[in-house]
Image (cartoon, rainbow, N blue to C red; front, side, top):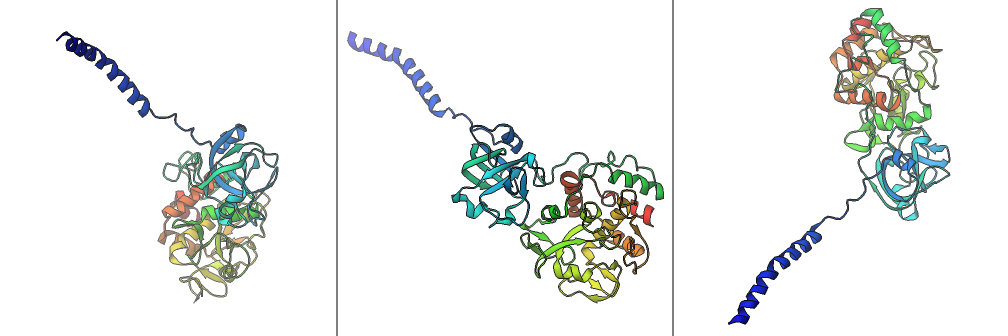
Length: 391
């Protein structure tokens, strides 16, 4: 029986070798493939204009030339501009994306203007487009993704953290000294935007949290499509809570475009409010439940009375007559006409107390600070200051 013994020995010797090969084979089969490259930010894509890549950014407009991007009234479906912030207005920080025919029906802005502000993930060739940093010949385009900077990205004090650093020069002060300190704080390092740019800004600051395609109208509280902005009946337009005629500032950059008092509102309701001061009483406003008006005053619905008060408190502190604009002031009248005054101060103080700042109001304040003007409404952050200055 020697042969079987030799056979058994050979098998015994081969088993470890075969086992090792099997383990190695299994290991190779189970080894994960190299991880796909992480998506690029827009800034990275701008600085890496070669090869192919996947980029995540926010749709901000339609490029029409090397240094020109349309933010509204879109004319074509063949190109997008994306950025790391939905609030970006500088073309130098935008990536121009070609939209080929298979993607135009879903991503073209002429046909889908409400896409502005949405996150986009796109894969394609990183190369110049319109003689500008771009991405051409896309092979994949989808909504969503995790962009580096969101519309509520922060730099400095946040809505949920202390703002003592921002307000350091005002802490401990009261009355006129507090007002003076706050004026300096909210007037320093401010970025102004054009009146046309206000359209897109309001689509971010006043977006309906339950429907990203809509904005919430201020007085009526209605949720309406972002695309219905304009001057026709059924559209929404830009309501100046502090009326333009109360200081004659029009729509020029400054008080005329200050997002802290500009809100979307139905065209008809906006016209009914006109330049009236604020006070209680009057007849119910058709189409805006909870609002009342008479010959010289407007009473907003209960849910936003405090919001309105804090917006006008801000304006009376921000614009003190030292920067070529009128000195805006509150008084206790409802017959201010074209004077740079607005009332009724005592009513507004009562509304401020009755309707304290909400989470939505604080978020809006933060978005304006972080992504647009880089200043804050102090009466949202510190409600107690209103009585000290205006009481």
